[in-house]
Amino acid sequence: MFFEPPPAQEESSRPPKPEWPPWSAPPSDEMGAVMAGGLVLARTPNVAITVPAIQAFSTGCLINVDIATRREALSPDDFQALQLAVFPHMVTGVRADQPLPDQLLRFGVRFAGGAKATTVGQRLDRTRPPQDPPPGPQLSLLLPSMSMRSGDADTGVTTWGLWLWPSPPGERFELAVEWPLGGVELSIAELDGAAIAAAARQAILYWPDSPQSG
Image (cartoon, rainbow, N blue to C red; front, side, top):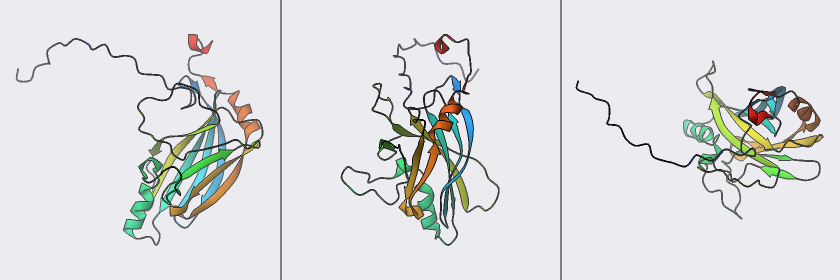
């Protein structure tokens, strides 16, 4: 035998990885109730930002956002810059007490009482999530997904998840987006917190008989 299995090695006793706390992502043991969105947040000649659906969980809600881009009259370099800026964590130059770079795609929510949360300043490369509850509300960008779409090669759709924790109050609240590079001025739409709360009661546990669900 030319290639042989490696020799047996002692398993290293590594400490268990910390769990993702509830304010960082939807619960892993729960299927959120899906609410139809159909909301267009913003539309420019090169960008469309929409909310196709919202998933309501017992601990918060996941706002699914589609970022559609097309080249149209943009040069190849400008279109490439636009496509790269769809990923806010790749944008440099976000510093305290400095104007936000035009490339930065940013989202935010604001409740009727004035409480606000945005995605500005978040990083996706953290290896250990904070284990102490932050002051709510918190809006977190979750890793995006890209799916194949038919049509022109100079178009693309990227889906981001906006995890809002804790669950919003049972009243209408604002969802905001701004992206100067994409020609998107500050755009604000309303979401129904009462409808999200009602949908959350329909969330389903994957394993209802699990001890964690008690």
